[in-house]
Length: 265
Length: 326
Image 1 (cartoon, chains in turn brown, purple):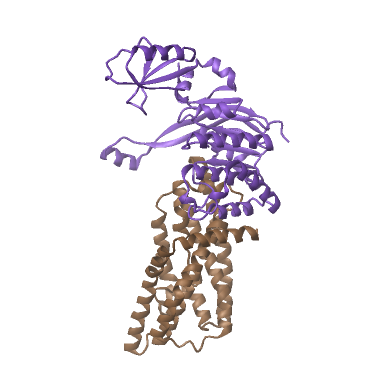
Image 2: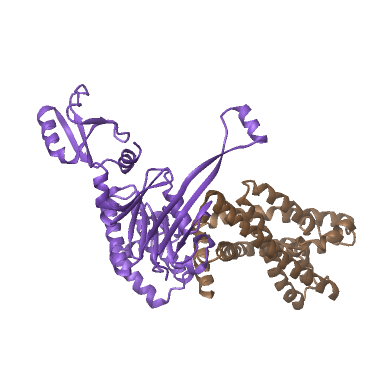
């Protein structure tokens, strides 16, 4: 099994390099919104002193961390896999004795991440000198706690997106479903605005939803803003969502493959 | 081991195809109430194939060949009947089954488009858990037969159609499958390419005792490789037996194509039945019995101002159509 992942990595890594220009475009597109949020919130905080207790530096450190966390936890499965179901190229992968989604597509996403993070690094350094965040309160423990949380967040997000992608077995409109899912992420993950600044109701709902596991929770861990109780609660939620999303994905996938083979692959 | 490698009983597949008339009104109506038409792609087909047999699976376009192959390889659920291959029910997609068979279909299957074939080969070695020494040995054999080495380092997208087909077949055989389903393995290849693939498959079958079921458009593929053929037409089994018996059943015809230097004014009815050939409208084609070919050809050459002449086998579809559609 290790050898399979190793060889899958070689193939996918080499493949992603072929698309490096495409990848750079994606990265630039993806960078636009966090940088806008960063700029807008910082200037508001600067002009008013703070926003509900959030200083300019709070916003800068939040979004500078978000750039990394989001890159680690997000995935592109809908784009890299959806079409295979729709145009039938999945057939070739279905008759291989490995799970198409949980092996090849997974490694493909990780390889993609590897390259985008390489591309992000110099941009991040430039932004660092531009905005000069004060990271002095970040501790090693915070970072060490955030790493498994990011891995967990990635898998939760990956499985949920994979489940939505697998809806392509029934409908060709998965992209609009995914847009809706993305709107939920925007609202409940802490991407648009740090969740503490959201109305109380949304904050209450958000802590039980999976979306904050992708962005808000790992950022707060890095920045050391959570109490022990909140840290434990986050990990427990993450673990529950990991199981839920796995079962949801597995169920949709199995039904989907059956349907695929019923209507004609 | 079960007595038969491939056992097919009453296998059927019906597709539901949405249909509607053209036009705006029909588009609106179909939004509310969709009409479906049942298409019986395969209807109650039975056959048994023993280990080591090479069987040609023939039929015109839309006869149900590919549907049957897809069911046998596990990609499709049948709507009725059953099938076992090597003792497995294919559509359960058990790993042990997938590791012991291969399906070669079209040009883009197991090879990654953007990277050299060598990388895809190594990936498949891992996926199919092929031990290193066995991998090297199999690769050496495949290389001997198909001359792969010069192709391995180029990105697959830069290979020609024939080169890609060779790699596609080779990568599908790395795990030494016991059963091979080949859908049009020589399609798009030139004569040398076709011959080479045929020789290779014959050799592979001899060396490994693998069971092969292949579909093809080319009669030559089938005559070169298979002692037994199965013909399906409109989803139904029409013939299952030796290839020599079949030629008795089907009157052997040849097509003589002639290009006349002075327009098409001559009446050819005295030589044979004139037929249309859509792929070549420049020439006129006459269908004659195989034993009369020499006689008719010499008469044609003597009587008419002939620019060019060709003698070919009629397309397999036509032969089957003639034999079973009357």
